[in-house]
Length: 70
Length: 256
Image (cartoon, rainbow over all chains, first blue to last red; front, top):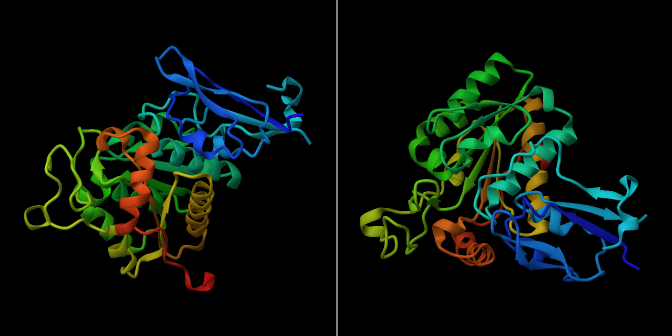
């Protein structure tokens, strides 16, 4: 059971991948699909998110919203 | 994705409402966006959105006023500390910050920077140092490292003909007017949290009326450096931090 989850504003994501290295559980990766601007946007690849918000804290564009079950 | 977790009471982190919904014009992975966000978060946490005035520079961050939901002014190139001085003197109760890059603060605006800090104006200056002129096409800046290739130093910076890299933060720390001088970075979550604490202290210091707070943020310029965002952060860690080591340079004596 996942403890946390993130919501990604895929249209604003620029695919810089700075967040993927910050994730302790390798939950996020760049998609093979592209958004309206042609960037490979971010997506969740597994259910191991713990809601630590590391990805959101390093995201230069503030596209990630983090939730964690109490 | 577990949809059941997405409830307002489980919210841990969201983009602060002190930033507008405009899409940042910065390149993917640029540290400017992160610094904008943490400044906005500090303003939100301190509850000073109504009493904050920012001064935007010339450079990549020239459009910073499009992103902050606070009053902003655009200064002539390099003159942000002079404009911030005027705003702070007319509105002493307001929180005034400047946001400048290395081309603005350490090149054309060196005079204004040094004199504002020497006068000890009660403002917070945030200085983004990426060692290059990003907006105009990656030319050499005063802060460019020795041997670093830019469009105007294609064989690397040669100290004999191009001079030495300028460590303006160390210069400013010598001035009696500065109260708090620190150097931070924003390429890992831990460093972002530390940088946010430093910016928070910079804003808190304005209430004490003791002098200028100066926060340098060593940042990347992946377009100017011709690297991917992740590679530029690694290069920053390996090269920029040797000349620009992170940490507090001048700490208020009561905090020691």
